[in-house]
Length: 297
Image (cartoon, rainbow, N blue to C red; front, side, top):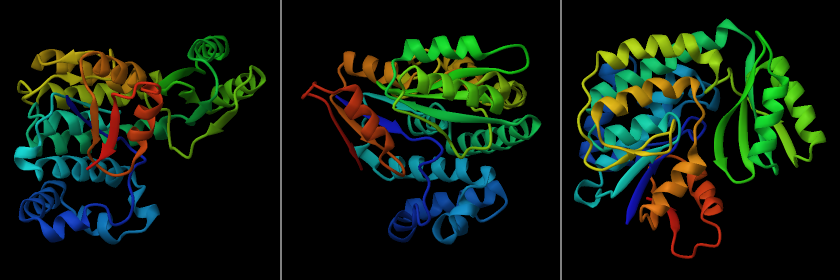
């Protein structure tokens, strides 16, 4: 069974989507439609911009979304997923590719999400850190020990066994990193991000995005969508909507999602969008299971 998976923020690169734009009439039409919806030529930045220009929040999230969704739509009849999932931002791509959101609404929500998250990032000094080589339970325990009123750190992204990203106030993340290194982590690396995604510090962004999501029409997707907040399959439009609202302040349970997709029969994971990060994660999650493969388009 084929599972299509969609990457999140951080997968972007200069030149992304240019081949699609140049060689596929549908892709060109959708990219130009996106330029009109956004009110600026995001394609110019995607195809020829610098890494710094592409890192702007208002560019990064819609850029990754566009590359991912348009890649899927250009497959035409070859896009026949048994199930889909997306990592953080990628969940919006998965929902759009699977028909739960139309292209215009999906893009508008992603842009609203990006702008709301940028505002929340500016409200308090916050960051994220990747913890490598330590079990999840130890990381969860240290985060709980370090967190206090007004200074929190939480598990944010369960990426794969041995790799978990934590998120919170700068002071709390730094303290947690020191304690986790002392507890045996191979690495505790603070990431070059502007804020504490998937933590309680995103509450203002969640409130803002909730208003936009509640005004948007969601449809029944063409296949089950596995969602970050509970790692379960969903087809009910209202459930999907509520899980998407909860996503901004909740952990991304990617390890559990991939495990549940494999348990449901997924044998071929196809990463749809820029980069190869999800392929690497799935290879580690499915380690020892020769029936499972992961590839790009």
